[in-house]
Image 1: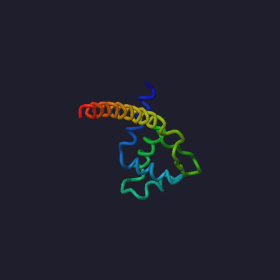
Image 2: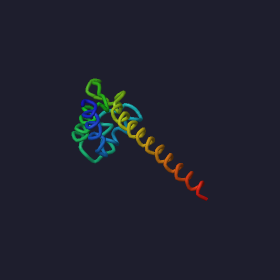
Image 3: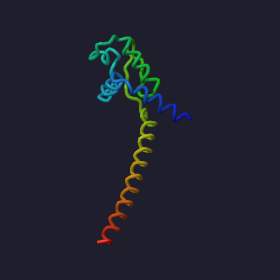
Length: 114
């Protein structure tokens, strides 16, 4: 149940384009809240709220450096999402394998009928 909650929180955090843009920026390296706010037309407090959502989801971490609070991507922050996507990929692969078997059998029947 905890894994499902973690996945729900992660997906909710990723549902917002501003938060995804913040994560994309942090993929390039650590940045302060003000640096993260620069390209957006929203206020710095709004960016801080987005950062809180990302931190609560375990996607980023912040540290205190004097008056600055640099952010960086959290190690393992996408683990629940990776697990979920792996499960879906494996299920899809099994479905394709079954489809390949069905099509091969049908092709085999056609070959024997001609």
